[in-house]
Image (cartoon, rainbow, N blue to C red; front, side, top):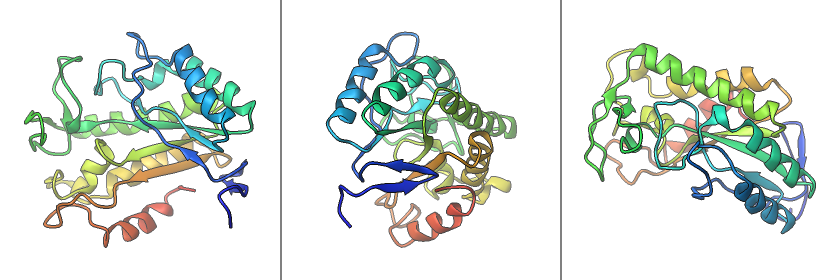
Length: 241
């Protein structure tokens, strides 16, 4: 198997196994949308030979505003459509990254409390987030589904759920940040419900992926390399490709 060989995933065919992952670009605008600069940025990578392009993470709920020009998913339909069109012209697949930074976000721009599984101070800012009520949790899960619908309607080939660094999904998974005593003390429950909701939104003929942090470098309570394969196996049956 070579990196240049085709990859069939989620009913789609990527021309190779080169993947351009999601990251902050600061190419957005004050309306929190994707711009023509995003389109040019991703088109250049597709033209250069990347088989799979994953766009900058878009916040799935208005409670999340992690940096000044962070995209907000419900405003990103036109941008995703333009990016998909530009990259599809080169044969690349386009995956929309869906995100919520949770307690690792910022209140500087929203002037509202951060949302997190538990009131654990953020490591760097020391900001203490709000403990998410059940209605908050339901709203964010619904937001993931709504964001997936926007991305698919815009012509994306699928979505990637962020459960990596700076993500609310990971914060529910981790003993470092999930100290709950309710049903969400099951640390995979939130992730399972997000995946199931997203898969329902995309339908069967789309890619649904999950970006997972495999080592939080805190073996006394965090996710470890030994735990990560079991987490991936348990979540894979919920609708991931």
